Image 1 (cartoon, rainbow, N blue to C red):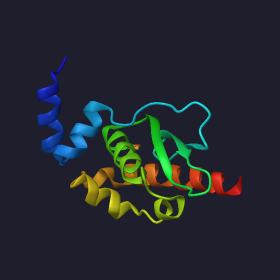
Image 2 (image 1 turned 60 degrees about the vertical axis):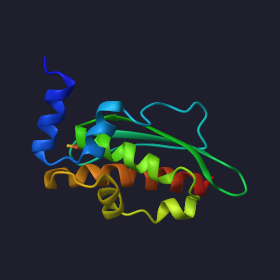
Image 3 (image 1 turned 45 degrees about the horizontal axis):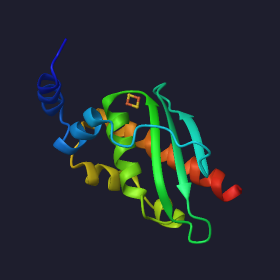
Image 4 (image 1 turned 60 degrees about the horizontal axis):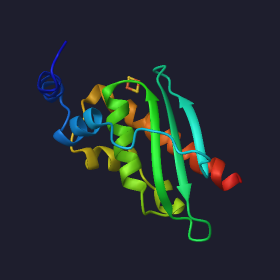
Length: 135
Ligand code: FES
């Protein structure tokens, strides 16, 4: 069984930034929100699944809280943590404008083969926001 330090070294060598590694290991924003105002579960083409839960302030449409769960790789967890961190305090309209490149910039670096994991997070968020808007 590898220690946390071994995992960190391995991920670093694969091309993950320190932020991405920290998000993955610390499980930032991993969890559930009971009775969320917006929710979606989505399985991407790679077969991995993400769920996003949002608490949204009525009226201002500010995203007060965001959590996610995933059955997926380190890239999915890093992207899920990043996107949920990025949208807290933003409005639904602002969150909708977040693109894959913004998530990658926020993380600093992610292996090229893991860019589709960022798409999984972005699509799950987009679908959750669409559901919210559809009421
Ligand atoms: Fe599927 Fe990363 S390999 S989300």
